[in-house]
Image 1 (cartoon, one colour):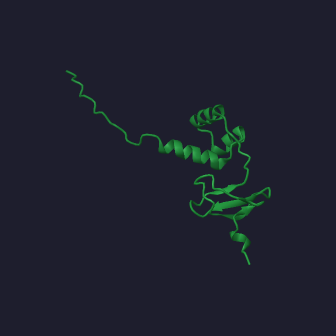
Image 2: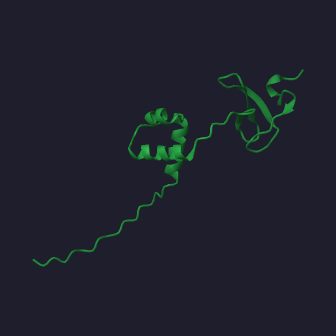
Image 3: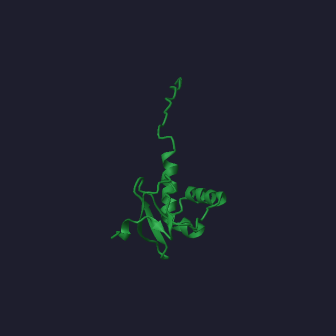
Length: 115
């Protein structure tokens, strides 16, 4: 008897991990619309078959950068742009990691002020 939890077949086709291209995948539940979700046993990546990928344009990311400079909360930016809060948080964290954390302080020269 085959345990259905560990079969890596979907409609008779082997599932390949989009990250490492491994066939060592298992069915891992389903997403909100009932589409089956899979997980790669090699790298741990979770994915769905034939995803409907939403591409966020560069103009939208430019708008996000401007709104962040205005100190608008993430929830507000999410409502305006239609980007989910977890995606925005990940984007902000990535931007923060790429900022130079070293601050160079230059000492000022003393002012020669005759009194």
